[in-house]
Image 1 (cartoon, rainbow, N blue to C red):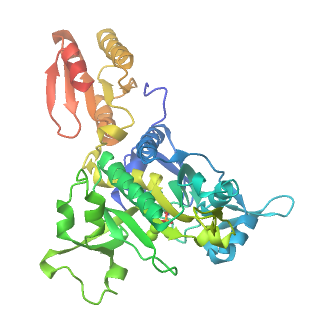
Image 2: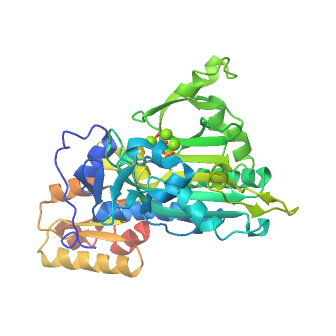
Length: 428
Ligand code: ATP
Ligand code: MG
Ligand code: MG
Ligand code: MG
């Protein structure tokens, strides 16, 4: 992609309403723009990152045996009346009427819809177990949307739903999502702490939230320092992590005697990036669905639901990966791998060298962004650092006549003057 063809409206100053660094940088780097309170447009660079995060989430959901489908954003109120949640959900639900006066809503989540879609076709225990997921926009009319896409009103969520005939199966589904979450956050370069979450009114349920540690996180969490020694590559990681103490502040304060010695108890701030929940027959029972069990009796399948804030992860990654100059994207989610800076646009030799590099990178399948604008070198350097592509190839008249290109690693700041061949090999 050429800078002159895309749209990267960088800002010199952070807008006054941006409180935290990820929000400031996302605006300054021209990744997103707010179009109404808590509602964002994803500009070309930001959208590429969002799609890459989504692809990693999808890969791990597929690996966990999830079948992807896509449910609509707009739902009918009838469905929610049947589960009893239409009245219970409160003002976070955006409700409206269609032209025929039917009550509609913009989905904040999809338990009811998926339960109806699948259970109306499932007749027997042989149709189970099943795991479905979709990645779709949600709307929650948050009282206080803030921190950019971290707490938006419209946001992208991966939500998965499992159906099992018995507790053992439900536990297997739950653990497979738990593991998928560990893999997903690690693949994104994030360290996420699984925290035991309150289970609500139905006893015996199981729930964990996954928090990325960050000083700007909205939650305070307490956990056993031993948790940090558990590797996600350990085949027992899920069992070990679930057995290790980790709670949100509010829950921790209810614990009469905390089993963790004071010198091992860590308090940190976290961003909730995922939440998994085994709630059993709440919806299948509530909406009147059953299947024939192994012994011929009718049973209400047991369900779990599993959410990841895909657009919130976008903010969490920036929060974790930046320096004074701007964003430092991890390679796997960077909008482009390489930025080409032409220091003398219009100079025949510089233009030709840049065009050649750009063509070779493109042919090699390396995503490159060529800053071909007629702009000062200083402004191009600042923009390239701000948008945080992993590699920069800097082409100027001196290098071109010496037959070299300057290669800069955005994360380490290391620079080297290399021949075009070596420069390409370095960044590919
Ligand atoms: P929070 O406590 O931050 O309000 P939640 O507990 O209401 O989140 P869940 O219902 O558990 O959210 O939804 C699953 C995931 O969706 C969350 O873990 C979070 O990553 C993401 N999410 C929830 N609300 C928002 C939002 N307003 N903006 C962006 N992501 C969100
Ligand atoms: Mg919420
Ligand atoms: Mg929460
Ligand atoms: Mg939650």
